[in-house]
Image 1 (cartoon, rainbow, N blue to C red):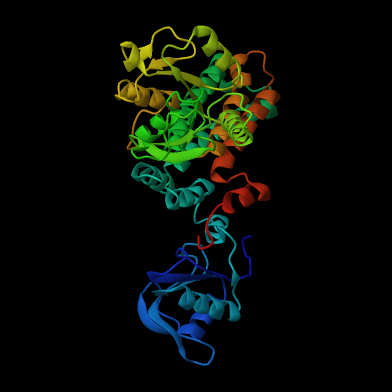
Image 2 (cartoon, rainbow, N blue to C red):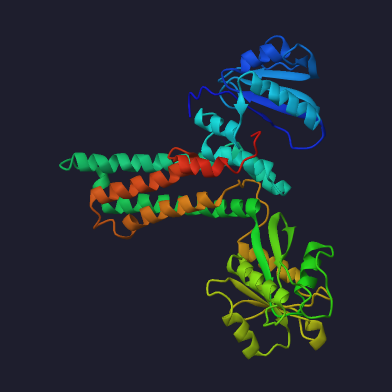
Length: 448
């Protein structure tokens, strides 16, 4: 919490050996630790070459030290960074020295959490730090950097300001009912709420794209044995990730591959063929396949092109009701038909040949359409599922008043606006709970 007297320390570079390793210290004891380890306090924000000393004055290592006095530091506190050689033994010894001088080991994400609590970052920017570290593509890294720069926060701040202005007028109407306030015009109220809903809707669309760039879409390949699921996985992955044979039931466990379609991360999951089997191992594979289907963003149900309608209908009925399904009719090359989308099909269907590659370009475009992905956007930003949920709640709160402003009591309208503002506040951290902060920062690495 703000004013926490603890000084924290951690190794801020990844485990293993490397050319350079960093130990980071933050808190009120940082200047004293610098005096003991370096033999003196460096000038602020100036890199200096020093020997790092142990308790007896012998050298632990030789490297570069940086001192950032608060509040002009990453955490808003006094921060010391010791950049030495990246060997695990050296870094552990240096960290132990800092701990012996009064620091404690930092918890996951605690440096960034302190930056948030001390007002150096808002919550959306703090999450962008973790997203930047975990980025799986250049586009994801660029989007996270834009969020760290405040792209999402500024949009949310502008919406919050507009909501605050409208709340002030509504509450003035409640406090001074005899005054002829402009707000009491129901058409004006509806217009302003409608404008807010439109702006939140636009932000929601951009946030959805930002989440896709960062988190990707989970696609499960399902269907009977030997229809080409593993061959499709290998083709999309660009290498032989799965064993392919003519023997039914070759795939018995879940196989996962990560690919990108024009910057959209796809998490591909190949599963065992869906059928009844007396083989205990294959039956377990089928059970795992159904578990993966339950949580998929998209299910690609693959069958052979000549599969009878009744058989396909039975396979579709066996899938969860909520599943988002695309039917892939593979081996179109054997029947001489044309590859591509099947018009008028419900659920959507594509005819293709994994063997020849026919129809796979259409499949890639279809997957991007399913995700609502329109390609890399230079003005985009990274976002998370919780941001989308908060925007949904803001829309829901405003929607009640938008549907019937004329019959809405001012007190109820004021409450709707308050709930919408609270939902937006959760995105930037203007409204937080300890539980929310715990969930967010526990996913960070120790040194951040």
